[in-house]
Image (cartoon, rainbow, N blue to C red; front, side, top):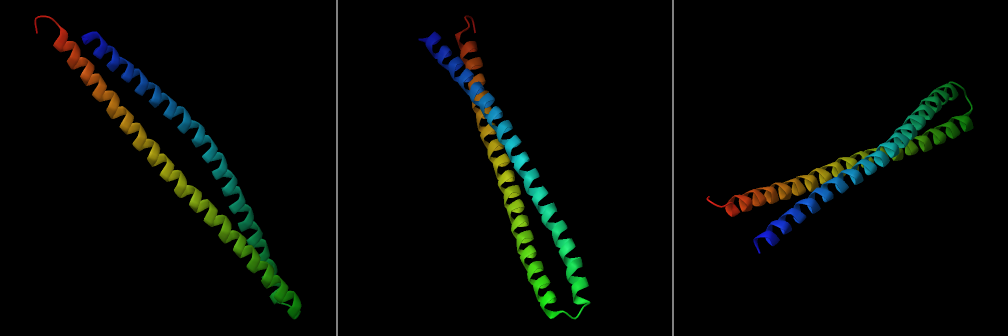
Length: 135
């Protein structure tokens, strides 16, 4: 019976160590995907903001003229780009928040596994000490 208990503890230790290694691999893969998507979102925000700058300059030059139709059309175009910029910034902000949350969840899961590993190691050590003759 004593060897069975020690064997079970060692199996539990190996299992938790594998869980930790798997968690690390999954987190690394997910981090790569999150980072790539974040770069895409940042590029989109940059592109929309550049377009917004160009459109703002265009609107300013159109306002200098007397063509009311051109002024209205340029203002509408500017408004549309402002909505695109707002949507791009919102997506980027939501993604950043989701990334922070995912990182926190991985840290919590990692800490839980590390606590189990430490508890199992303590149990193995205590069990081995108790089984030593003369102690």
